[in-house]
Every structure is written in C-alpha cells, then in structure tokens.
Image (cartoon, rainbow, N blue to C red):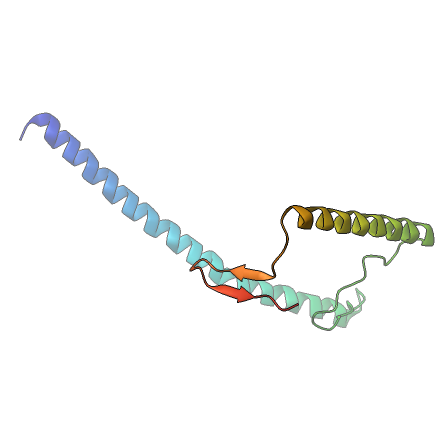
Length: 123
C-alpha cells in the first residue's frame, strides 16, 4: 500500500471515529436536555403555587380545556366594529375568490389519496 493510501485511510478512519463519537455526545446532551424539561416545569409550577400561597400574585384564571380567550377582549367598541368590518370584508373577498376559482376548476367533493383511492367528502 502506498503512503498516500495509508494517509487517506488513516484520515478517513479518524474522521469516521470522530463523527461517531460526536453524534453520540450530541445525542446524550439532547437526552439530558429533554430530561431536564419536566424537572424545570415541576419547579416552575411549585414556585408559582408558592407565590400564590404567599399572596404575592393573583392566581391566574384557568380556562377550561379548549376554551380560548376572545381576541376582542380589551378592545374599545370602535376597535371591535373596525375589526368586525374588516373580517366581513375579508370573508366576502374569500367567497368571491372561491366562486371565481370554482368556475375555473369545479370542486367535485372527492379526495384522491396518494394511493389513488377516491374518498367522498361529505360536508
């Protein structure tokens, strides 16, 4: 084997070993980071309860699952009306575009999957 071949082989082996060790090191760091997430979350929740118990902060209002705060909370009546008009105008524009595009390419209500299977879309 020539000297250049030996050098190339050695460098390749060194690079491969370095890559393998580096990937394992990064995976271990990520695993440790993921493990710390729930621990930090539990600590944060405990601190929050402790502060609420001491009376330093007002308890946060928990909304039921799936219930979102209204985007109109805290808006003046003028701002609400302006937003309502904007939404109405945007809705009308979207309806107009849908009609325009349905004339060009009518919707059949069918969904074709990647495998070519046709599924009826019953709205």
